[in-house]
Image 1: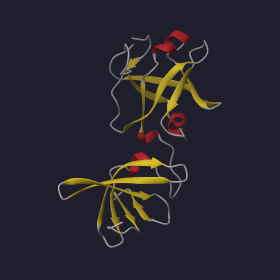
Image 2: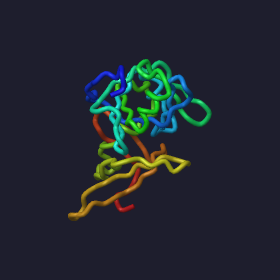
Image 3: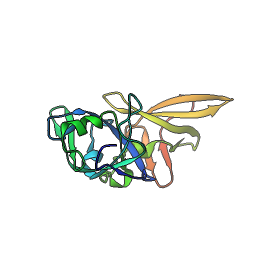
Image 4: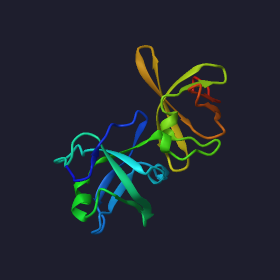
Length: 187
């Protein structure tokens, strides 16, 4: 166990947002590999919850809490330092750890902006109230984001993709757990 790491429970609304990479410098900074091109959740949360690496020999067990002093973008990566990590050896011992932050600590989204994690699991209906499926994942194609829907039809799983753009998305109702689209069921 790394000295100073406090055992913790993973919050009920915890979302995995990154992995810890290699040590950066000699003063306890480490690289962070975010899962998002816009890692605001890492910057807005001052408490990260870590699970040990799944590869190699873990240097700690169970869930631990890390009190972040600073996280920032540097060149084309994210770097961070924490109160419990005072030198390069301690930073290197975190390598591979999975980083979780509470969903409640994410910055508030702008109107008509959504976190992907909030869209996963929503039911999708078209304008004719025909069920289109449930959002299984989202893909970034560079030009746009695509909803990947999954539905059961005739004892097999069917996959459908719908661009997540205003031309096809009529309404996102997070409270009602559904998305209404302008899309035909036979397309």
